Image 1 (cartoon, rainbow, N blue to C red):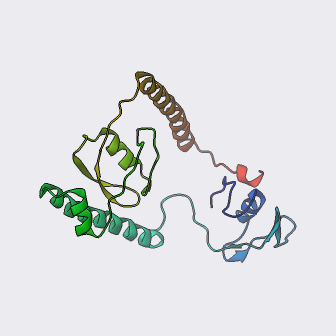
Image 2: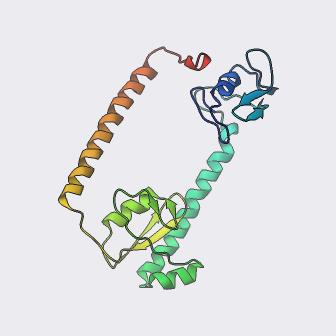
Length: 203
């Protein structure tokens, strides 16, 4: 939970609870301004507990050790799976044969284009969408390491986008990067200045 956060899973408009959390001591029940422990949020009564507080800046290694280990194991596992899949591709095997060897199944997704953010059967996989958008038709491409797995893809059919769609996409990308540039410039100035944001205490 962060100071400016306005949502919590399962609760409607929990902002006052979040504000109170940042006035609480770690290891104690969260109290409101009247020193009451019960928060009435919509149709629910909530009693919350502050387990620990994490200061700004780099976290101590001990606190993030398990997260780092999990991330590294995930990367190494993906590398190993990708290497094995690549060997099967180089051996000339089809997707069905590779799936049988790997104990998986071949799934088909339709209507994938550069605007897509989800892939049927795989979930939110931007790397897979990007790879599929530029893959050669009829050829096995990959492996592609995504959020939820390591994938091989084979494009069955390609439909060229109208020129108007490409221009529209380009305009949206320009707008996105323009807004991102403004935001990152603001963040750089904010971090370079000696300002501590404590708006969370008031709203």
